[in-house]
Length: 228
Image 1 (cartoon, rainbow, N blue to C red):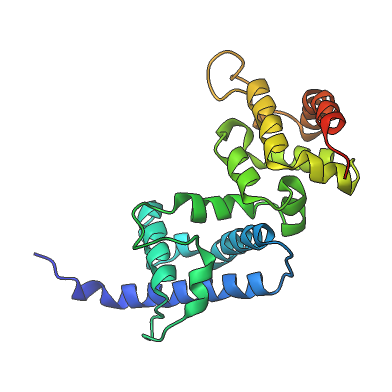
Image 2 (tube, rainbow, N blue to C red):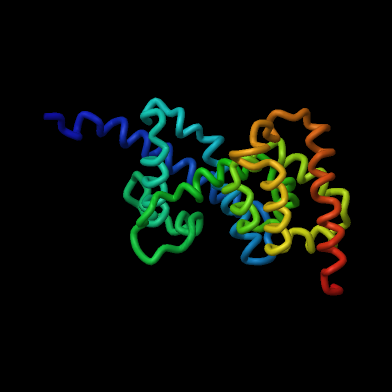
C-alpha cells in the first residue's frame, strides 16, 4: 500500500549524513601515524567510533530510533561498495571495515558498536589500555560486566604505573586474556558475586580493587616473560 518514493527525500538526506561520517572517520585515521598493521586496525576502529559519535547519526531526524541493527548493516554495505550519495566511487571507505569475501553476511555489531565503545576513551588512553590491540579490546568488550568505562579507566591508570616494556608484556594477547579472565572472575556477569558491578564503585575504590586483583597476577606474568 505504501511506496518507497515518499521516503526518498529523508533517505537521500541520511545518505549524505553517512557520507560525512565516513569521510570524518577516514580523516581521523589518516591524521594518526601508526607502525604495525595491528595498530592501524586499532586506530581505524577507534576513528570509526569517534566519527559515529560526532555525527550523531543515531539521533538524526532521518533515522528511526532504536534501529541500530539496520544502521550497522547499511554502514557495512556502504563501506564495502564505496558509493557516495552522488554516485561517485570512494575507495577509502573500504579500509574502515574488515575484509569480507562477499556482501556482509552478518550485522557488523562488533565493528560499529565496538568502535563506539572503544572511543569512550581518547585514542592515547585506549591505545595504552589495550596495547593498541583490537583482539585485546574485543576480549574485554565481550565480557559485559567488566567492559564499562569505569573499569577501563581503572585499568588504564594501573597500566600507567608500569614502564613501557612491562606494559608491552602485560598487553600481549595471551597475557591480556589472562587478566581479562581474572577481572571477569572477580566481577561475574551473573550468579554469585554479580550483585555489585564495577559501575557501582567509586572510582578510587575500583582502582584499588582492580590493583588487588591484577598486581599479583602481573608479577607472575612479568616473571615468566622471556627477556626482551
